[in-house]
Amino acid sequence: MPLYELFAVAKPRLAGGQRALVEIMKAVGTQIQAANGVITDIKYYGERPLAYDIRQPGARYSEANMWQINFAASPKTLEEVHHTLRVDERMLRWLVVKRRPYDPLPSTVQVARAVEKVAVPLAKQEQLAAGGAAS
Image (cartoon, rainbow, N blue to C red):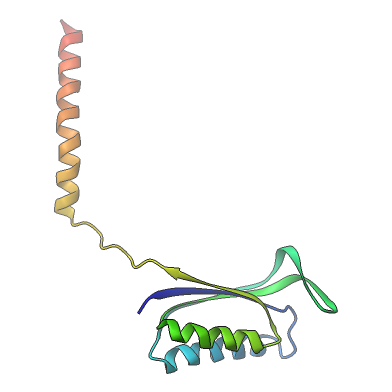
């Protein structure tokens, strides 16, 4: 399953306050889990000022509630998540980004060998330079 990041922007000062926002996040999370997806992280950034106003018919927003969910799921699940967010009138914008899988970290032996390849010749050059300068 590919890894995804969902960054979402919801209307500020929602009726129902934090409970309404939790409702949206819970709906998305439930969809992901129902499709055998795995949620790896949830972050809430609070109500923040926007870089530019978002206009909708009859409204203009300069602040918004921002949140993020990181998850692993099938591409089919993304369509369902997009649909859920599209029909929810409390949502202003959202973006889903496919993340790269993490590369495994190199072992300490590999790191030591790489450092040795650079450090030993460099130390020899410094010794030669110091010996040549002393004469």
